[in-house]
Length: 149
Image 1 (tube, rainbow, N blue to C red):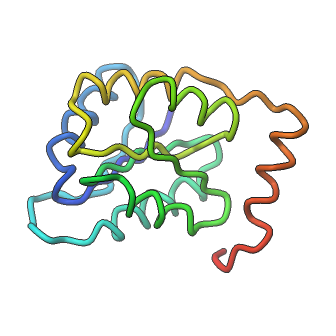
Image 2: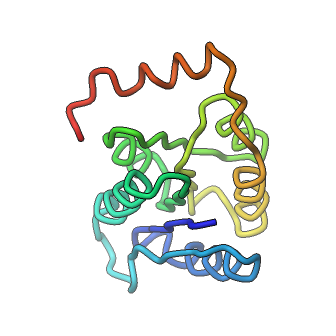
């Protein structure tokens, strides 16, 4: 499974550990930055990289990590076809995949330790979308008024 992973300076440590965890579990994990600690860097850059790559690689997933996960979630959702969700628990990740076919998981480095992040990520990757008619209809409506291609 191809997974694009990005973080800002606040998520750098957790991102490194998550990349190692993904590789150890046989996933094709791609590091989208940040690559070094640069206090005050913008979360937008890795979020844009990950969202673009997820959009251009059907079936791929993304993982974004910043302090609160809010900014990255907002940025990633600006891209047509990208459905990003900030998940703070495994149950939230399961529901995001099952109900909304979320393809980008956003994690808070401030509120999520590595063990919990692993649980959330595993739930995200192991859960399939349930394509009920109402869910498909709702997802299709998400891009109706998108100004981004």
